Amino acid sequence: MSMILAKAGPVVLGGALGFLYYKVVGCSTGACPITANPFTSTLYGMLVALALSAGR
Image (cartoon, rainbow, N blue to C red; front, side, top):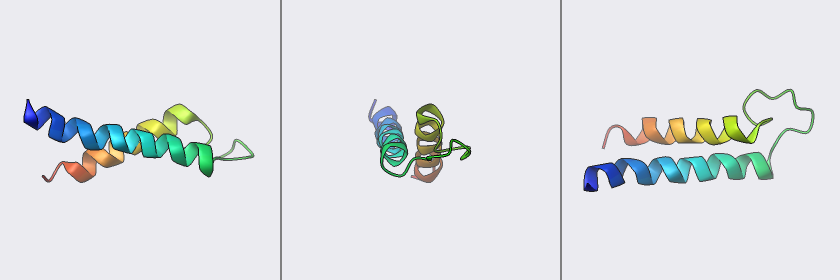
């Protein structure tokens, strides 16, 4: 159970940071592939957090 929490915690945090990046920085033209959509920025944040936490 603690291994699941050790992986889920950073992924949830990464998703929150990805969504926050969308809200704060965003993309005014809609041409940005990651920040134009809240779902893609959240997913990207989650994937980056998963990749960074994989070595633990």
